[in-house]
Image (spheres, rainbow, N blue to C red):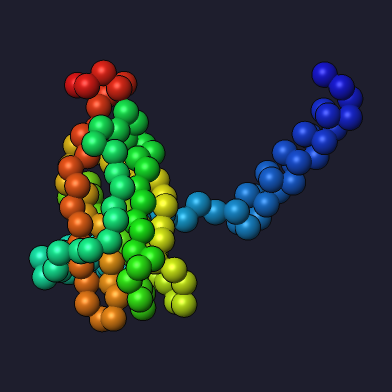
Length: 147
C-alpha cells in the first residue's frame, strides 16, 4: 500500500470518527418508516379505489428477475396538467413505493422500485384534479428461475 493512500485513509477515518463522537453524524429514521409516509401511502391506496381507467402508457416487466430493482415507466405526456405520478405495489408492507409531484413538466417518469413478492402494481396519474390508474401484474422470481 502506498504511504499517501494510507495517510489519506487514516485522516478521513479519524475525521468521520470525530464527527460521530461529537454527535454530528447520527443515524436517522428512513422516511418510508415514518408515520407521515404511512399516511401518504394510505391516502394513495384510498385514491386507487376511486380512480378511473387511465389512458396513459405504463411499462412494467411481466417477470422481474430481481425484486430489488424493478423498472417502471409512465408516459402521460399526451395528458395536459399532470401534477402527480405515483406507483403502488399492493403486496408491499407500505404500498406506495414512489410518488412524483410535477409542476409545469411533461408527464413522463422512469424509475426502479423494490418489490417484496409478486403483486399487482398500480400506476396513478393525477391531472386536472382527477386521478386515473393503469394496473399490471408483475411476477417476481427468485434468481430469475421462474419460481
